[in-house]
Length: 137
Image 1 (cartoon, rainbow, N blue to C red):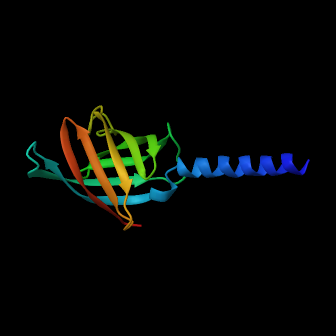
Image 2: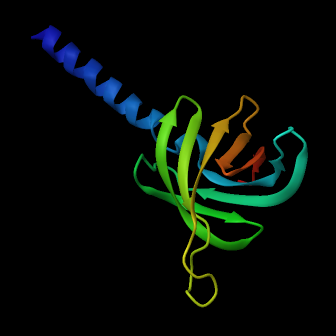
Image 3: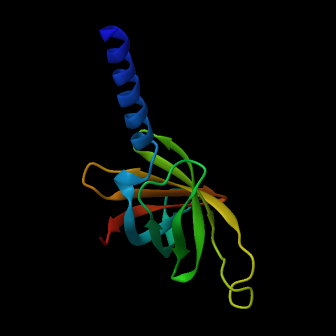
C-alpha cells in the first residue's frame, strides 16, 4: 500500500512540474525592445519596436497575451510549443476595430529565456528579425 501511495505522489509531482514547464509562468509580464531585420549577408537593416504582453499560467493552444510592432494595433498571441527555454507563439499582428486595423496577418515567433533574465526574440516568416527584449515589470 505504501508503494502505491508513493507512486501516486511521484506521478502527481511529475504532472504538476510538467504543466509548469509548459506554461508561460517563467516569461510572464510585459517585454519590449528593438529588433533588427537581418539581410541574407547577416547585415542589419530595418528595425522595429516590439511589445509583448504575456499572461501567467497560459498553456499550449491558449490565448496568452498581446503582440505589437511599432505600437500599431496589438494582436493576440497563442502559445504553440514550449521546448526547454524556448517558447513558440502564433500572433495575429493587426487586430482591433475593423475601421482602424482591419483583419490580421498571422506569423510565428520564438522567445528564448536567457540566463540574464531577458528574452531573445526570433522571427523568421519570410523576413528574419532578431533582437533582445527587456522586461518592464
